[in-house]
Image (cartoon, rainbow, N blue to C red; front, top):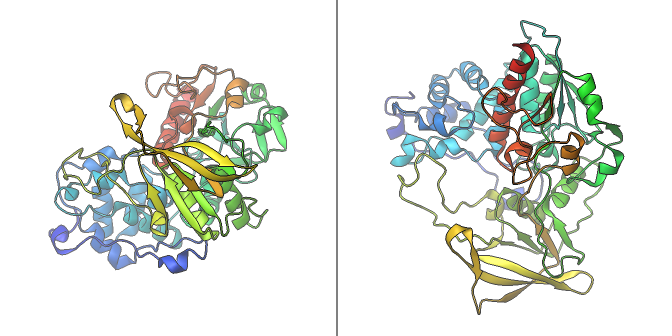
Length: 482
């Protein structure tokens, strides 16, 4: 695959990034898409390696060698057709996927991997700009009706697949616009919301119906989950009576809290309270009530949500941003064969962290301090032991000034109100219980009700959500029509 000597003659080229001094002054995307020539040369680095581990470790199992071959031939239309066979939304994964496939690239054993993520972005943007993203019309009409609750990546992938299989799909979203946390949680500088609107236009033309501001449950459930703008309410029983099947894709919405002394102080927020408010401000709605301008911001957590808070706080004018991560600092490099082909356990620096952030590892927060409002936090260094047990290290106690604290420690499980509405069984972590294989694949304990995405799997990646949505759609279609 690729050029015969492409992996020898061409070095990996990263997509161009806008300078930090410029990009922190706005919320627009700042990573550019490859031009045609760069994409062709980068795809040409793909080797005829024999065993495409990249395809194996990708949750969607995109056939990267064939995709890269089409690109290095300059045939972007063919490349888009191939990637669309396994990935409904390459414009999303080409921007916000951690690119598990690149750590599984055989070339990474001796050199830098093929830039699969950037190539995928190029393919999708080429396809949209050249009118290659058409409207798919199914060959049959099953006359089966399916309701999907939620509108994140799992829900949208499931809706598109079910519609293309000839079913009639209605998506219910509790907020004012479709997209779930793709729209409300991920900062605009990483993922422009115009991309969602562009894809939704195609899905509506294919026949998917979208209903917004509608909560499946009771008015009393408005306070459950991270954010809700619902003004209409539909009971679970109404859905069961009206549809042939229901798919729940609620996401993992219950944030993990840090219940330590001083938690009641003002100035301490969950990450999504900050991120959602900023996305709504960017959309011309209400201003972000969490004012970080000129303030010392501390972000607690080490994942992507924490990184999103960092980039947003910097753009909002924070005087300093400090990230506290209780995990140990990982090495920046490991032997290429260690863990191959899976995602390497190394220290990774996000674009937001590059913009100006102090990162502190192996540190736990023990208390918040202040008079009515947080002004400082207490910390201690920790040591990790067997079975992920952490032990405080004596003599390492410290104190740090903090005007605003953002808790970004991940999410525990989906909305309990939705689980109670359908009287669903859950797993040990509080996620919706549903197997992923066998005759009852993705089926919950409630008749006619299926589940997919983070609400079933637990907090995960967008690429896994898309994969779950696709797989669930085919399980639902089999249940309805075979």
